[in-house]
Image (cartoon, rainbow, N blue to C red; front, side, top):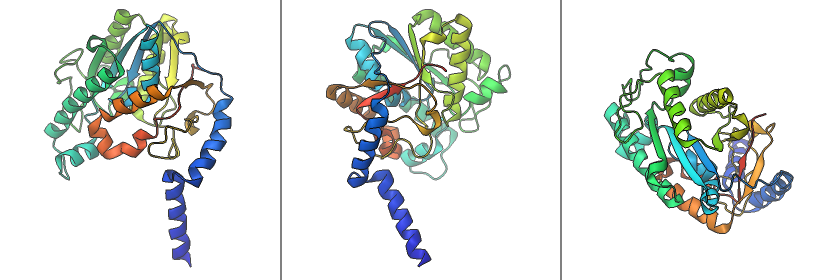
Amino acid sequence: MGLWLGVLALLGAFLFVNAPGLVQGAYAWYYRGQVGRLPPYAGPLGGRVLVLAPHPDDEVLAAGGLIQRVLASGGEVYIAWMTLGDGFQWDAALLDRTLRPRPEDLRQLAQRRLGEAQEAARRLGVPPDHLFFLGYPDRGLLAMFLENFYIPYHSKATLLDRVAYSGTFHPEAPYTGAAWEADLRAILDQVRPEVVVAPAPEDAHRDHRATAYMALRLLGERGWLSRLRFYMVHGGLEWPLPKGLHPGLYLEPPPRGRHLAWERLDLSPGEVATKQEALRAHRSQIALLGRFMEAFVRKNELFAPPP
């Protein structure tokens, strides 16, 4: 009896996370009311928007629709990627069909993900000269912000302690918080954004939290906190549910950020379709995390001002 109860519990959990039938209908009905009470988000139309992405794919997951809306309204969009995802060993293992990817495999993955990000940006309509690839270590940003501000961080995944990828913003920059801060200062000076879209500090991923801390620091010292809008990708408790492609559902506020004043940007069917196409450009990630990533292709995107 205990074994059968366990099997039923696992089956129920699987259906809750993935099933498109009755569970999806109940889920859509519940969260339609929840999200519908959020104030509609008109967006920073016609201005300059800078999207800060910890890894290639975060820009599409969180703001693929917003990017299209700004460009269609005559605005300018710039994207800055903090890392190239060179610490994702499971991804390198799958792509290279090896149980133990080598440091050079992860470096090759970084260059591949840079190219994928360029293609995703092209599909969204962002010009190539509006893209900034910083190339700092995946899963190392929080250490750089807190402990390695002046002494270079040494990546265990790639064995690098400085930016070593072609096409990056500041080649040979040391893996330090000071260098990262200087690069972002230079980008802010160049772009002069009217809105900066960045991860929320409550995000479960350490690179996302570190990017949020750096954004708060740099925008706060300039008196630009009113220009900041948060997004979330790693929102806790298997969010977003259900997994897989469900473009007819709303994206509900993530559990880790329910206290934030989320604002909803409703997307047109064309914007949803283009976001899905841009997401497919991140082929190395789709191969491993496809159902998680597709769950962000919804009828809306969510952004929140700092508390």
